[in-house]
Image (cartoon, rainbow, N blue to C red; front, side, top):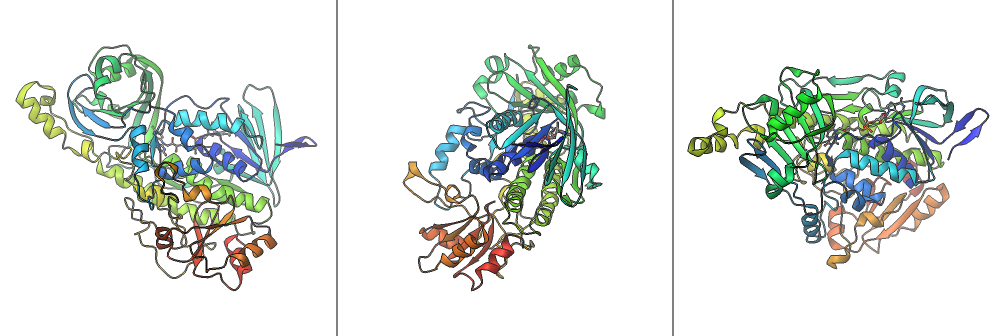
Amino acid sequence: MDDRVGRDFTTQVAIVGGGPVGLVLALFLDFYGVPSTLFNTEPHSRWHPKGNGQNARTMEHYRRLGFSDDVRRLGLPADHPFDQAYFTRLAAYEIYRFPMPSRDERIAMRRQMPVTDQLPEPMFHVNQMYVERFLLERARTRPNIDVRFGWDVERLTQDATTVRLSASKVDGSREADWVAPHAVGCDGARSLVRRTLGIDYEGDVQTRDAYWAGQFYSIHMRIPDLYPEFVGHRRAWMYWAVNPDPATRGVIIALNGVDEFMMLVKPSGGRIDVDVEEVAGWVKRSIGADIPVEVLGHYPWSAGQALVAERYQAGRVMIAGDAAHLFTPTGGFGMNTGIDDVANLAWKLAAVLQGWGGSRLLDTYETERKPIGYRNTGAARKYASLMHDPVVPEEVELEGPRGDAARKAASEISYVRKNHFVRPEAEDAVGVQLGARYDASPIIVPDGEPPPDRFPEAYDEYVPSGVPGGRAPHVWLDDARSQRSSLFDRLGRGFTLLSFDAAAGTAPLTRAAVARGIPLATLDVRVPEARGLYGRALALIRPDQYIAWRGDRLPDDCEALLARVTGH
Ligand SMILES: Cc1cc2nc3c(=O)[nH]c(=O)nc-3n(C[C@H](O)[C@H](O)[C@H](O)COP(=O)(O)OP(=O)(O)OC[C@H]3O[C@@H](n4cnc5c(N)ncnc54)[C@H](O)[C@@H]3O)c2cc1C
């Protein structure tokens, strides 16, 4: 918790912005035992739907923080399918469907996976607003996190040793200054922190050739009659309207499986001057029935951006999440990339603040993560470029053979088949989800073997590899089906030395770690498949589950190895 020194509060890390990225950073810092203060302008978590995909890597981070199962209980009921379905209108003809398993089916499938299954935590579709509320409630229970929701950070300065922030309560009742060794801007697209640091975005403001570009509306609504009257017998997670009426062009997404939905719609002409009645009219035309629609909120938003900040750090201040990169929504990478940013950053801040991280460690945050910002925004743009605005003939809504033929033709168009808004299968875009690599980082020790996948282009491919610089391959350690235990659950909070061969000694590295005050656990893994995946007798895993080094025996100079991987 913060202490007051003179007129100032002090904290270890000041986090500006309590969206998903700031919240996860605070929770990771807490996991490593580091106190933080988390400022957020709004007094509560936002209650308007945004992202719908928590990807496989994000779910692994939640697992590490101990709550992936809790997150999987949010959103749709356990037996609700996650299908993407295409209708002329929701009350009329269904023309195509990508089936996707319900939460219960997915859990059952997980139990059948081989020992070397790389998706211990498959992507999960739940709206960000439920997750944000959960994360905030969780943060409020952690004594290490001083939650300052309803506080606006107005100014930030830094010198060689300290960052100083001035913040005020949004109700005008108080203002105060904080000092901290470090601050992180997780304050979104208009980031005060990024602008204060004089950092611009680079890249493309607008994708011109794609459907997911330009002015959209995001509508939050309650439609109590939709399930009982129209879709209860053909439930899906996403309902796309495919008909000639441009005002219906977009998708209705089920949020709670009962009565809450969101709609993303692209009004013709890029209009932003619509009122509630017009918005409700779009929804009803998309459904094809005049049923009660309660609009809870509607906001314009811009799709098509692919922007990455010029720098992720200036002095003692870092930026992460939307403050560091802006995505077009295809693939669902924006928030997920931000959460992966802070998983990379949190242990480095902890290491430096706890005295075992070197002076160069924090610089590797930008070295490692900025290329991933470029890679992932590129992947989102590539997926966006595959989907085009459809021209749908009037016949699609006719009864009889002419209508059937038109619906069959409509089911083949790219708007349906190349729809990468959120990919239909968890394994799609798996290279983006799990395949981030840090081969060029100075705190990774290469061993001369190239990584097996085509990084960075392999968006749809993830090949688990023991080559240092990539995510530690996953292994199920017990095969007694119902009691499977993930390798990831056995890793320590600091570094972990995995030993796949009893003949390879581990003691010298343990001694060197103790001498340097570096948290290091050792774990014997006697699973032949694991030895095969890692390719050596020993592998040194970082706190963020990345491979820092591997070998068949420890190096002669364990001190030097530890100095390198901790940024000295
Ligand atoms: C329609 C839509 C669909 C999307 N789908 C997906 C998806 O499927 N998957 C995905 O990964 N991403 C998706 N995204 C993107 C995702 O919503 C964002 O990437 C994500 O919200 C970014 O999180 P953040 O924490 O970086 O920033 P934000 O969510 O913008 O949070 C920033 C916070 O900082 C606070 N703040 C700002 N300035 C200050 C200040 N001066 N002082 C205090 N607090 C401040 C704000 O109040 C805000 O709460 C989607 C976005 C949209 C609009």
